[in-house]
Image 1 (spheres, rainbow, N blue to C red):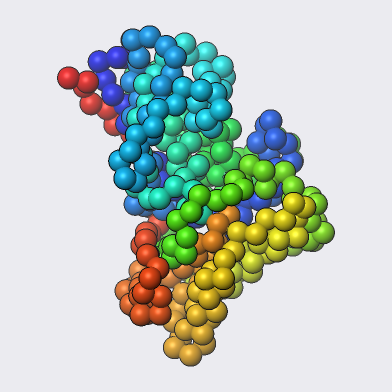
Image 2: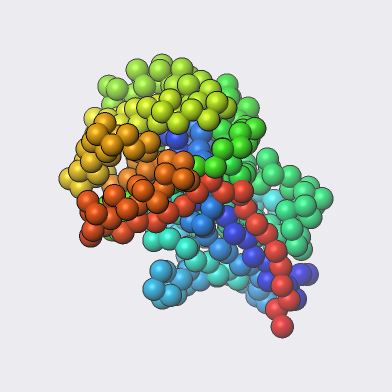
Length: 342
Ligand code: PMV
């Protein structure tokens, strides 16, 4: 047993540039389409795992105010994922888990991606006694396998197990799925405009199941391969206007599908639209090279080059003094380490 150590995983969030929205198979987590994301850097979940003296599994989650809630019941997504990992991998030891995010949860910053990713890494590290990602690989857990296991907890979590830009290929069958990093080295900044910190009323799990009720979904699917090629070419060429135009069209299209689904999913708020109109005006009148994307929430991610970011922040603060900003950038992916319990 490895109970003299605490194993800690830090897994970043990611922002999808081509969105995963819709599942072909719920049980196998098979997406309707390929997606592509940028791994973030400072928006992370830090999760520690330790072998417990006796069961059941216990997850203690601290919120941004430091208030800790303990979970042992199967209704919690993380507890269910732990049970899945145990079934799939055959480990029996109960775990004590503590976890917190470095950003507010449930507001359109993908806490499920970083959260389920960090839980996967920390739990398997504790079960196998692995002190690093290299040791996990030696213990028969290479990165692709970890990404598969994380993806089973939350689809987008699989993409958070690599750094830089990451593609999740849907493949022609559930077992043909692949998650892999792109050979692109292009640091970009993501300025997250917090239009709202409220928990969203409808989580992504329900939304993934209603996509086909939208008359816009099949035309979207038909057009996505061409958009994917555009985004990949723009990333390879470091062509920000080409990337920006493609990701803005992509985000608006996903929200058009959401808004035309049954039941309707309306994540956007009046201030979301204000920020989008403002950004367009800044580009047209001041040549500000910055572009938006939006996830399943009202907050706006503004993507720009690192040297443009201070100017974008200055102008945002002047135009929207009441809105908080989180500035993040392209990150290198997860970390794993261990320390003695005493
Ligand atoms: O991983 P899930 O089930 O929370 O779905 C994520 C969906 C989006 O964030 C809206 C898009 C994406 O690809 O991350």
